[in-house]
Length: 328
Image (cartoon, rainbow, N blue to C red; front, side):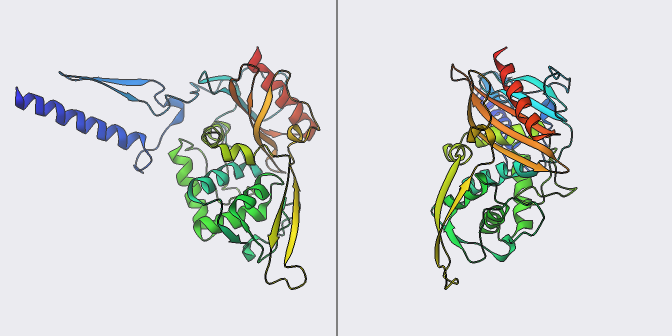
């Protein structure tokens, strides 16, 4: 009997070790296919115990296919509405299709900064932050500027500063290429295995892409951080920047305004719903993109995502209509 008991204990140890290996981020050999991730507890029965192990997606919305639901009043190449509390996909269209994320990329950049950085660290803006791409959204930073990671994150999330994103990537990983590797690693750990990132800001690149479902997985993780919600819900922000190498203006105040028209009040949101946090994005290749977290009158949380909407105003009208479906 002691031998059998030892065998059972050994079996449980092996099973739990294997389960941990599959479910945690350290096992690089496991690629999660999120469309078929286990949504429920897995039960293993031994002669002495029942062991319950949560599946990878036990607390996630799991889409069983890519059917098109409720698309008449949403004008976008791809979109999805996810109920966080119910773990349910309420509306979807092309959620597994490859798309360009534009500046919604900064959602993942922000997550990594929160997980690996210290908000009080003072960061010097590198020369690589000088981006000359036409139409690039910037925070108005200059080489040699010094500000805290916290203020840099405001500079990235409020005005969508690409210069701030590069400064953050360099601070975390030393250079943009190394940070992109970290982005891809973290995305895979979250189950976002149909994405590939090459920069921290989302400027166009054929090898920089995601899916609506992958973006849901990443944004869902972000909403677990109160600091992220603060950065992604602030309509305006000002802070002091110092630059010892600038003899004429060693200290200055920079002010930023959010481009999210729901947060700025330019457009009204769905009736009975409140925006919790969000991030916009736009390039010619990506179209107009918006990722939002919102709550209803009962405090239930949702994530709504629109990617590649053709017209700025239509994107906001579509997002309002999409969010309203949570109340249907």
